[in-house]
Length: 355
Image (tube, rainbow, N blue to C red; front, side, top):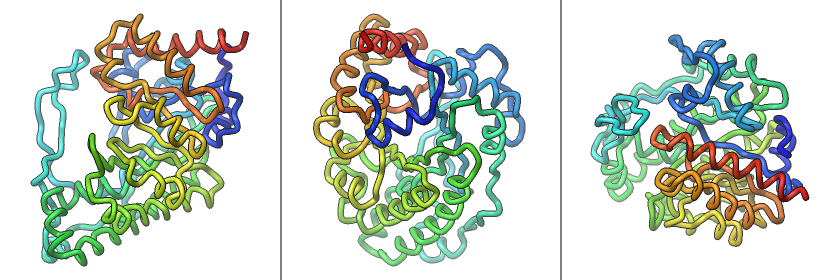
């Protein structure tokens, strides 16, 4: 049977020392609107995010689902271009959904760089993490997050302006990267040292279906050094670092494992590298998290999701170093019966594997 929350078992999986018959479950995040549907009380908010009461309900919902850890993040304070908005057509609609356009930019030349309002660490609001540390159920831990340097670079400069600057003004890109790193590293260190924080995410989408957003050479020059210093900051606190990144990272996976020093990799898509294939390629070197692809999780029937999940567990659990979860996150378009079917397969697998 699945026990109550025990973050030590989560850590055992991250460090690939766990009993392969005990696979933890976890997510990058469960969208609030999904959590509200699954909770037994109100999740309310104030100007700092979830109230302490709302945070208790939110975390208790995760405990009941079987989680050992919950992501709680803060933004490092960077001002972004205005995001484009469209109607959210998910069954549990949020009304509107935002997305980044390639042309939106806050920094595109030296003048805009000099005018940009770079934040200081003192401006960051850590209230969500402070409330989570007070409300966290026994046995569970916080997975801290402040985002990632590749995303912040692409969002602040915009993908088009960044691409042009890499060719025309690489010094400008280096200066932007230095400012991003200085703020991120200060906030990351603060979060990693906070009470009840047991691991840190570098949440940093770096690729698309066939490759990385920037060339591998540019990734090594402008992104991976910052990630390496973030990972070192987590390790200095004695906690692991987990990388979330969408996209095809095959060209830089060796860098991420050997140079950056990630302890776990999250986010897998069947059309890129199914988690079962990732287990064969990298499972002996790094923990793998997730892999129940969002497309089948959304489109299949609950019975089909159940069988699909069992197939992943049967291939990824042997040898340890695997944590079950969705391929990305529990988005508001994921049918709740399907997600609950995934979790039921996880519980039933433990009963079968223990006999």
